[in-house]
Amino acid sequence: MFRQIREDIDAVMERDAAVKSRLEVLLLYPGFKAVRAYRRAHKWHKRGWFFFARWISQNSARKTGIEIHPGAVIGRKLFIDHGSGVVIGETAVIGDNCTLYQGVTLGGTGKDSGKRHPTLGNNVMVGSGAKVLGPFTVGDNSKIAANAVVLSEVPPNSTAVGIPARVVMRDGVRLEADLNQIDIPDPVLAQINALQEEVERLSKLIEGKT
Image (tube, rainbow, N blue to C red; front, side, top):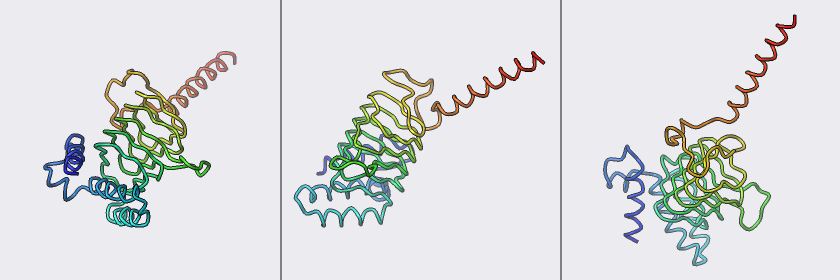
């Protein structure tokens, strides 16, 4: 248990430039508190004490604004930054060393039964406001851009952006600056720009014929 607590604190220390001390993480960080409450609730959930497990998780949700179903399976060193509005569904699976920002939903579409929520591999980053909906996998080392809506599988080592999300980087091809929720290509904007260029080209052709 103490090793797990130390690892959860380490996850915050490693990935949050604003943190000043371990004590600050232990006492003041809602993401850390929500993960710790989840780990307690999950143990009771596995034992079949479903009501008590939900009581722990809902009490934590009221205090932190982060709702993690005790049935979810979460690996080592999850970091939830800021955290308000984060929702993690019952059948979600999260690998090791993942990062979720505020407003992230790992949810279902309402069309599936059984496994209804996504699986995140190891070292996955999900940007603020992103929605990952359905029983598919986001592969290891992948990144979901802020406000993306992901409705289908994302391969390992990929970056997905947009609504609905599209993969724009894969297999080691990186941006000039590493993904930071700002320096992300926008495929919708790229299409709009292409259409605008085509309109301008056609306008010049028409003008040349008149």
